[in-house]
Amino acid sequence: MTRLRIAVVTRYFPSSAEPWQGRSAYQTLRLLARDAELQVFFPNAAYPSLLKPRSRIYDRLDASYSPPDVKANYYDYTALPLVSRPFNGQLAARVLLPHVRGFAPDLIFSIFLYPDAYAALQIGKALSVPIVAMSIGSDINNIGDRISAMHTRTVLHEADYLVTVSDDLRRKAVAMGAPAEKARAIVNGCDLSVFHTGDRIEARRKLQLDPQGETVVYIGRMDVRKGLRELIEAAASLRLHRPSLHVYLVGEGPDRPILEAAIQAHNAAGFIHALPGCAPNDVPVWMAAADLVTLPSYMEGCPNVVLEALACGRPVVATNVGGIPEIMSDTCGRLVPPREPAALARALASVLDATWDAAAISAHWSRSWNTVAAELLAVFESVLSNHRSTPVAQDAGA
Image (cartoon, rainbow, N blue to C red):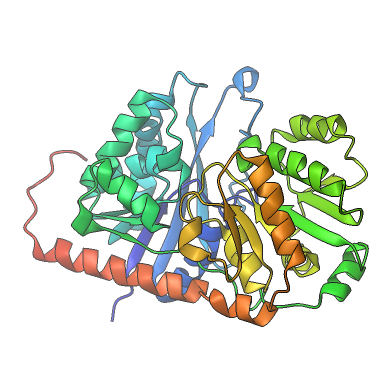
């Protein structure tokens, strides 16, 4: 049987500039690559040196970089901050088209709706191959401008199939114009060989943490939209009555100075620790060390950090936004409204005061990336079968 040839058009994927980016996409694609001929085409917005935005890394990428098990190619397209945003999908498509054509895919898969999936849609039309688009959250929840919103709706309406990482996102996409019969949620998984119950004392010894202290861990982007100012306020109020409480914020991001200032403003530097991002291998160690893992975010798709914490058997305190309520219940933590530090403080205290069964929490969520990859492959095969059985009008574009 001939293996399916899948061209993946996405920048939600590791690169030489941001090797931590797109971890969930990478985990899925490396497994898909075992059963299909798969190649990633990464469209990189290359800005003139004097106009590079400060908030992100916009370097020219190392074209030879490729994470293990997935063949990836990185292509620059010229862009200007804000000015070119309405055209970035078309600009990316123009640069990628000859390379994707040379790969001769049966199907194009794109993660992130604009500009990535919009570029994929233009390429798919030129090559007369079907498109499967995936929404991961911010591409629907945080659209930047009216033209990007218009292009996003074009993708939702015209893609051959839409996959979202939560049912909440699927409903939003349908409300924006995606045909309900061509959309489904495929919830993220995690690497169960890495994320599983571990010894708390041993993990704390490795990280040089107090073996007896109350330990709250946040792992992710240093971004105020992750609810970290509220977490700092909540922790400062709790510390008055919990002298052994320590909160560890582990990650990188543009809002570190704002968060460090908030920690200082609460005189909390002795117990709220803003640490650098950790290596992927240390993420399960931090989770094993935690009494609880928290994500008080304002918006989410299907956050991997919650799935990984649950797989590690740690209770989670998170906000009831996006797909989080679909993967959590009171049996494995607490859900709170976003932007409410007092409610967050109460939930943190409630979880710290309770006794939790790590094995039961881990059993609550044991979905692997193998399952995600198998479900995606089934979608691809169904879409391709429908495409081949449907007469297609000759496309004049090329």
